[in-house]
Length: 264
Length: 167
Image 1 (cartoon, rainbow over the protein chains, first blue to last red):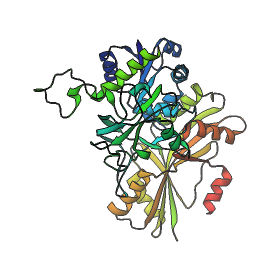
Image 2: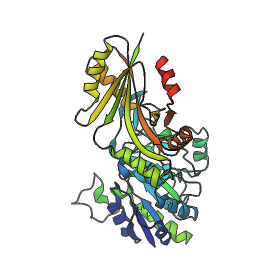
Image 3: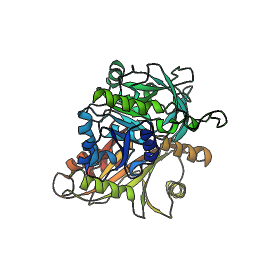
Image 4: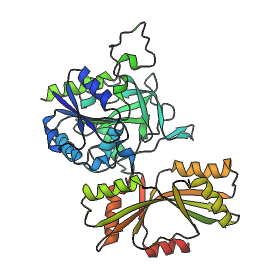
């Protein structure tokens, strides 16, 4: 099972992502953006990790989305192979029209705007640990194939542009009706509260991750590779826990593996 | 009656973002035969309701422009551009946090209570070859320079520039 971890100029999470890919038993390698795009067909799944591809020039994800490798990934997505975009990877998938999956740009991940009690309390880049509620049924999406509906995950975020906005009036209804909303920000009890600090970036309906209609392409703002091992979590005590204990983010990588096995 | 100070700001060192846009348009998007160059400016439009506009413009420029790497030009109640390129003005149609922060900084931290509003825009200066340049500029804007779910754009033809100046 071969996984390509995409690397654009400015990507900065590819090595952690590759560690996670290998730790669940998949063969992974970093795939530079300027390799022959045709080589991508030899892989079974793809991660587009976080970072700042092309320094977020013009806007996050815009330049990377025009690279030939993205045309190749569009073909692989159409063939049903799983693609998971994390943070900047999510932004690239949106700009490439792969999410929400209509083939055109149907939404934007805009600058964060943190709202509390009707007031804007801060804007811009923000990093913190957040709680996610899995909204879709299990097996709906490649990146949460093994996660039950309603399951909670604690995963970090770090971004300046994760605020999902759209001018397409029917999009939110469609995302909800077709169970394309995969993750929402919530509090530690699983309650979705559509204001800061629970909704960390002002995203419409507290959305943290969506998939395409087929479920094989997932984009999520939080970083599962940064909570892959329990030792990455703030509460980890090295005197009590084992270094290789799994963290909540591991489920995303295990899900992709299972998705590929089931759909092989 | 309020008046508008337009502050055009551009890098005097190489602009990597403009170079990347040019490169992407030429190498990835098929505009190589139509495009001669791309440059970029930031535009601050600062609305004030009193004060000496030239003097205020100088003070605002000292706050908003880093002379070590940027140059600027002040235009009072008008917005003019040079010939030879198509100016495409890109603005956020959702809330512009940076513009609000700039307004609040000028009003509340620096004490310019005569500042009514601040708007920000990016001006992409597209040096195009051949005919139908306005159509090409629109195509470039829609395919690369904006995401329509958060950005708006305006191709500033000479007539529109004069119209804006007259408002």
